[in-house]
Length: 316
Image (tube, rainbow, N blue to C red; front, top):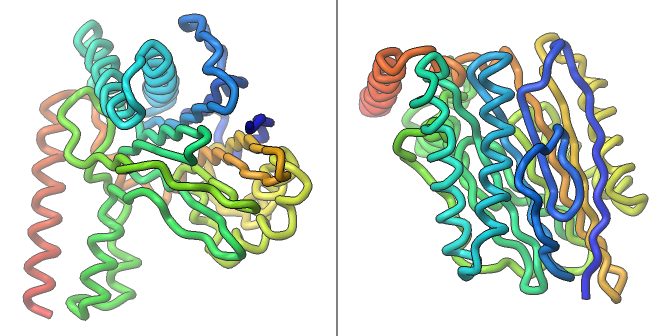
């Protein structure tokens, strides 16, 4: 039987406000819950959620909190099998944003990424929308478990195929534009695990916002390898310290929520939330404007960007 240990660590970066939210059930949230009282999920079961809000100070914060609350409330009230619960819970989160916009049209354009992770005796399962990564650390290596719904992987695939250069892919101004996010409208891309991924002794699971990319994979591996043995809180603090060391001029909030799983064989599995955003990724924010008309225009712009990329690939 597994028991869970959770903790939070954060840095505000260069901004005076926080747009990102994370919550662990059972455990704690990075914001005042004020939601439906949740029942005990039962021994050996944990749910962790991260939402990276977008749309400005007020709207982004509201979006991320709303998504986290809706996800947990709906997941806790369902008795379906995990895959079905994840799918239904994602829809409920998106519907909650739609309800807010319908009641207050001035909120149109608010949005959020979402990573919802389920830990139980079978392993880990997840659902995600957006570009917030879910990593698995195992035996000195880190692998990405979920899909990146920004344009970054599209550009990287073109570079790998020799259609554009690596430099063009990395410097493209639309690289961080999202192809899918929770905005209350249709979800173009959804990633749901097909089955539980078994976890081994020494594994770490890390869920983060895209800002964690400030640290490259070798650096992240080094931190987890050195600090993971000290527990989830110390690990999260070490990651935050390293992020702060990079001194990114436009670094936004950094928020970590680690949870360790410690079964009888002394395995430690850590869940770490890193809530970051950077103004250098402002192209992704351009999707989230203040009116539905603007959203349509931005979607048209996004489609034109894809078309331009395809044309460039053909020319190359």
